Amino acid sequence: MAEPTLTAAPGVTVKTDIVIIGAGQAGLSAAYHLQQRGLPPHRGFVLLDRSPGPGGAWQFRWPSLTLSTVNRLHDLPGLPFTQVVGPGVAEVPASDAVPRYFREYERTFRLPVYRPVSVRLVTEGALTPQGPRLRLETDRVAFSARGVINATGTWDAPFIPAYPGAASFRGAQLHTRDYRTPQAFAGRHVVIVGGGISAVQLLDEISQVTSVTWVTRTPPTFREGPFDEQAGRDAVALVEDRVRRGLPPRSVVSVTGLPVTPAIRAMRARGVLERRPMFSEITPDGVHWPDGTHQRADVILWCTGFLSALDHLAPLNLRGEQGGVVMTGRLSTQVQKDPRVHLVGYGPSASTIGANRAGRAAATELMEFLDLG
Image (cartoon, helix red, strand yellow):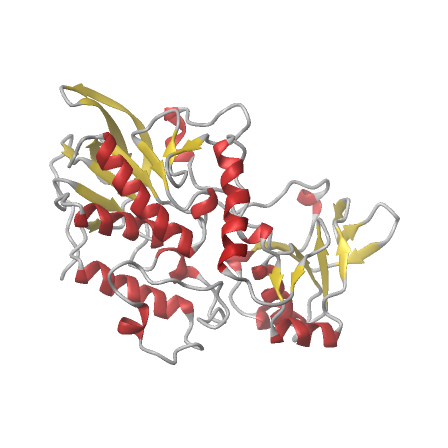
């Protein structure tokens, strides 16, 4: 199936019941459940995706991130991953396999994905007999919808904390999303900042070609043994509690700890996991600690995560006094201030399995709220 084309005369607003912003894991899951509940494509719902092709953020990941190293990828509803990509593909780059799967998913269920379309602003729209509508300004045409499922994720909002002296640094400052291969750092000393799964993987790769210093804000927590379903539910519950109270969400991974894999054990044997606490300032040629020690550096690689990409929703004033969006609903996808808006891939639904469940909850609850069947 060819991708749908977006054509409208200048000044014309495209009307639909629900707009899904983002066609990654959460967005595709929500679209599937809207369709399964009887909402027709195009007139009933559309997906707007800013990427050039299917695959969500996965299409931009570094080549060494394979299916064996990603934090477990879950099937989308209705189509097993192995049915598309096949078994025994653990070493296939995720940037190849996941876009292939998403493309087939969109084709199989004939989902109305329009791309590339960048949503710039979501504002209050016209008042109609069915209730107030939302207006979505994009770089192509405007849309009018009764409800919005926001599935923009975090990839477009990399987070780099502010540190004294950062502007004076003469080397390169990069973020996880800029990483491609370790060979690019050969011959340069790299300070790697961050204690998450991505930070540890890049530390492993880069340390095999050049000298590194690993810096984390708090001592990393390593998790021995299996991570069972109850542990997963407990971790999600901690994140969910924060968003229900309107606090900025933490990632699910931040409360689960780092699994001790064969790669971690090999890094321990090589002495790579000797971390230092956060430095206090950045100098033109490196980083400096309060105790007076200094490390010369050519590159600072910030593996410090991402924020939720919600700037386009700012006109709706969804954030509360605590700095986050107060969430409600069965799986904490519904915005308390505006029940017409659901956030999936936010807070407890930021993991792949959480995104699937959140997509279903958002589709169900939003259709019920809008009385769409």
